[in-house]
Length: 198
Image (cartoon, rainbow, N blue to C red; front, side, top):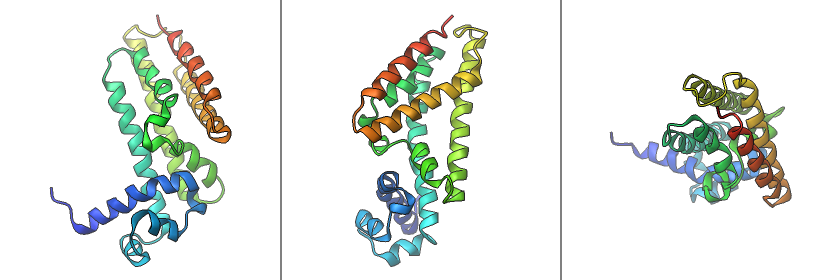
């Protein structure tokens, strides 16, 4: 299906401004930043989006979609449930290899900033976090059914621990500008996941 010029321009704006929003945040991103990133005029940008809010929401969906697509492809590349869960720490401890993660996790960045300042962005981050938890829970339940994961494993508990470790370690890596804590946490998470094996 052929895309229109307007759809192409919108996609360009989203793709070019995604790293800016993920690095600077919603409040820290100005119209000048958007113009610099896209090479477009203010009129052209706002001719395609009603306001900065609409761009920010589209960018969050784009950033989260990139991470989700990457994880899905890697997870579906293996049948084993333990190997599928290991995709998470293996990806995050090597986040610098993935351009869409270099500025940080879009959920963490958005949730931290939008907590009390931007209700719609906070809602998107909550929904994304819920989808992530559900995906992990489903992988664990699948593993229990396939007798690859211990049957007494609490899927919700493991999901919360995994996400908390990933996001906490990611935050430390960003604040400290080095990967020591991230690598320690992801190595520990890999051990935790391997210990779920029957």
